[in-house]
Image (cartoon, rainbow, N blue to C red; front, side, top):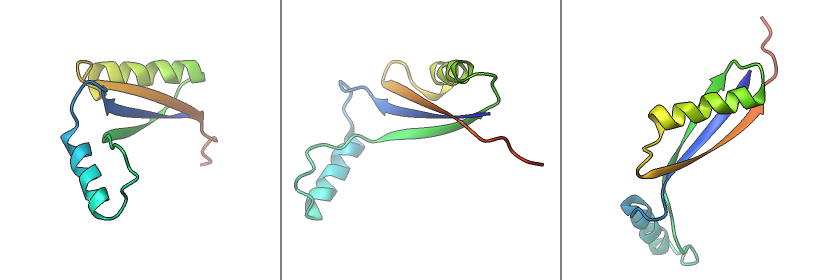
Length: 87
């Protein structure tokens, strides 16, 4: 069993109004050292695969087919083995 985490963000060339609004709010709260904010999403997938490579491939396919908009978003995937669950 593997846990894959897909972090999906807007491409750098795409404007991020939510990130801009968050940056302004942080500045209003005194966090003036924050230079930029980009908002994204994180999706956790539990994958019953034989190998880490297979789990990564399943997660990548999920991003390509459903989770990420390939026109506007990039994604990165981390995969870690999970201990066997006891009955």
